[in-house]
Image (cartoon, rainbow, N blue to C red; front, side):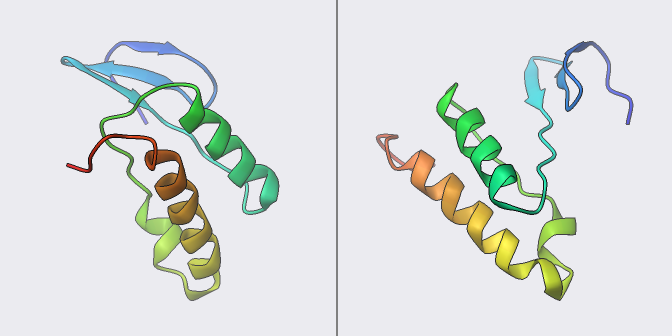
Length: 82
């Protein structure tokens, strides 16, 4: 994947236009969900996108649901949903 203005990191922080993007690829286990939770707690995000590759294969549905719950829990401290 090529983005203009790569800033740092293996997973990657990228700058495109005026938008800072963070790509976080997690492992399909509790360690991956902990990494996701830790990342969400480290900054404030306007948007979180969970890739379709996690949702579409039936074997990944439970991981998708757990990741979604992790994002929802992290967002519970926000004052409102957009």
